[in-house]
Image 1 (cartoon, rainbow, N blue to C red):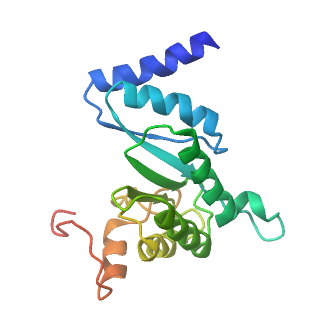
Image 2: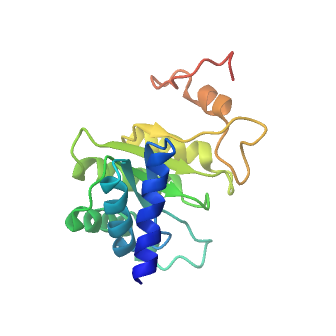
Length: 184
């Protein structure tokens, strides 16, 4: 156990030494004990700690309610806040790309109500189930400050939504991406 803790701390120290400024810290099961120790190491090394709540959707017929619900994700965020782990921003990360827009919207809307207004919320998803653009819109409409996107040919599928596709989706909505489309 001591060796594991030593490696986690060394990880943060070496990232700082080599110029990394922010670490997105997540636990696939939202185990706050894991986020707590590593988050304290990240902050202690002088890095910005982006603590993460991990999202995931289940196929129809397998959804058993609470564990993959907005309430569960909101409770995970509350547990992070109760732990007192230092962080500079919060990410909601759907690494499987299987969450629904409704879950994303309700989760981020609840987080925006809980978190102080100066805390930035970032949303990350993949296009695995073809829902990335819809989930990104749900995150934006719920109050996320930032979304993760990718550039073709890497975008789509098991990667993030395409930058230009998302830019096109945002046209006429009052939301914009801070990009130069000619450079993309």
